[in-house]
Image (cartoon, rainbow, N blue to C red):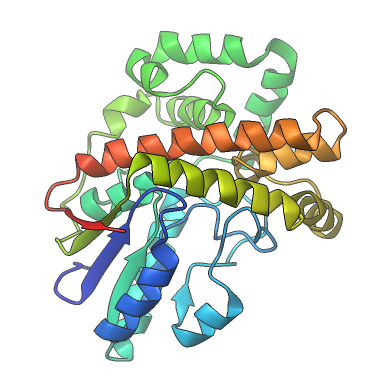
Length: 291
């Protein structure tokens, strides 16, 4: 059962590279709170450089939850995140502390606001079948099939977004209903107010994104991918499609040079930040603060 999140829950969001971590530590200390990560990539063990996780010192200063909870070969669903977040809230409340959700993954924030749509669980066998079909007929053909079965979902999902296209087809195949129809079936909202959003001028944000990207490659994101894939095996679909790791895999395979990868990651991260800001501007009750 999803808990009602109210007076003891606070939320800090903003675009990637805006500087949420430092502010979150200060807020958590002021609120006597523990932090629950709202980041779809921070859940993966070993993927540290490209996700800009809080440092060990920061995680020692304030307890963090939902970081390093899944192997990078796994598919970590929104349903699992919401379930794990629920348990984290219960644990933190048992210590008499407040909860500070921190991160910029819009889908996770939407789930906290709206609750989880009752989407069906799908089997590994069904997903494997779609992946095999992908290798045979290609991504364009799969997206065209989705367009036929669920035009609304196909319009919202980019034709090259392999993970989301396959997930939509899985849901349709399992339930017989369009994904877009099922996503409108929200339970009662579980997110109250207390949402703060970091606001940062676009030129400054783009400069920070460009600097962070170069630092990622200087600090060894390609070597990190090599170590993780050696230890765990090939990255799962979610991790391998993440901006930064997708390009590091291409560099590691010799299909892209490092400078080209840096430029592509910078562009894709700016696009990600724009999408995050667009979504956050439509969030009711958000209070914007200058970074």
